[in-house]
Amino acid sequence: MDTRMILTYVMVDLFCIIMAMAMGFYINLDFGNESEVKALRYSLISYCGFLIFGLIWLLMENNYLPLLVPVIWIANIVSLFCLSAIGFFWFVFADMRLNKRTMTKNRFLLSALPLIVAGVMLVLSPLTGWAFTVSSSGVYQHGPFFTFFSLLGYVYDIAVLVISIVSTVKEKRRETRRQYVVIGIFILFPMIAGILQIKYSGTPILAPATITVFFLVFINIQSAQIYNDALTGLNNRRRTNQYIENQ
Image 1 (cartoon, helix red, strand yellow):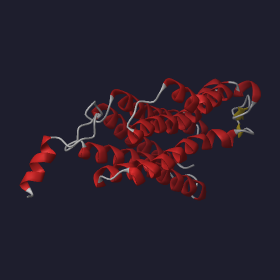
Image 2 (cartoon, one colour):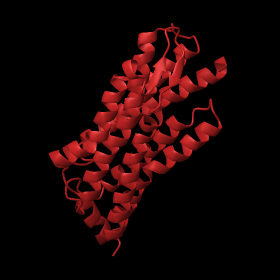
Image 3 (cartoon, one colour):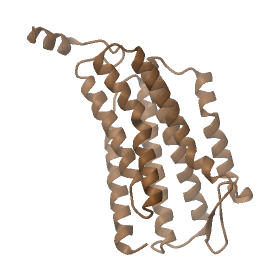
């Protein structure tokens, strides 16, 4: 990969990280209940971790950083885990937001089970080669379960899409339905970007596509909170005043 493309990757990823950090900073309890806010922040933190450790590996792979085998292992383990964690915490956020309830401990643990299994398998990869292998000279190769780690986040996103469709059908308020649709289509941007990334290898597509969906959800919910109470979802005084003015 030439220097210009490396620079493009670095600049795009840094820009996406800054956007994610800014959204995480401005998310507060007006955005939703405490559990929702935490889940969304953790999803954004996982996204930043995926990009940061992915950049470390990219720079080492292209000899812009010293090629240290232990760091290669750590960077790829953390990056792959964060990729799955993005989807998991997004699922936790969406489940609470769409179902208008706090996730129970048992439901949380059951939902987290695939992520926990993935984490254990990733940590054991230096011994088993399940996710990937790195030779003593720094040569990287995918392992037999690499596809599982790459697609686990999409499984959580598909679950969100299903919950979103069900919730949208049940919901009567137009603005709330629109919010549910935006949450549900989270999977579409990363999925399309992932396909394009495979076709146009060496192009930074996935990172900006993912942060775009985060941004759309952030703006959509923030706009809705101008007129709705964050905890109950009911219209507030601003909505009442707007209704009276339009009569």
